[in-house]
Amino acid sequence: MYKQQLTKEQAHQKAKHYCAYQERCHSEVKEKLYGFGLRKTEVEELLSKLIEEDYLNEERFAVQFAGGRFRMKQWGRVKIKYELKQKQVSEYIIRKALKTIDEDDYQSTLQKLYEQKQQQLSSEKNIFIKKRKLQDYLLQKGYELQLINELMR
Picture 1 (tube, one colour):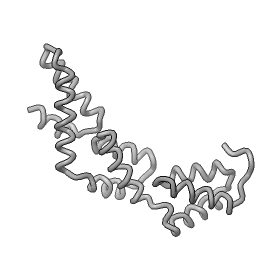
Picture 2: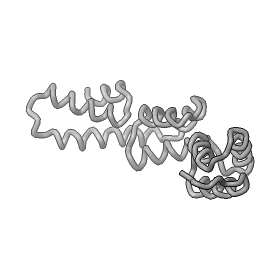
Picture 3: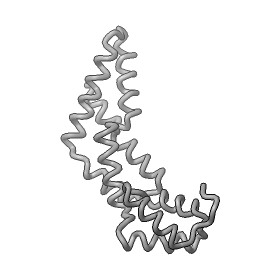
């Protein structure tokens, strides 16, 4: 936390750098601005300014977040959606962001994770325990139960 109180102009400069470094959601930037010791009206004003100047774009953030979490961490849509909700992103933007994930890539990633986990569980003799562990793993990664069940058939 900042010990000194920043002026609105100083906070604006810092916020611009903060947003330029990587895409941010509104709630992250709002928190940062309050951390600079600004009052509610100043925070709202600066948020509007950052949006106008295109430093802050929630849709761009959500699309980048969803794509990154899918590609790098191989998360499923359920987990991505949950994380975006935690960041107070609107339902409409979340749906838009999830649509940007390529369906073929999504299916093949799910397939790959399934096969890798099956390999890891090769020593498990009990078929029911094996299936349960596979299902739990894929659910924890954020994939839809219906897709997991189709894969396991």
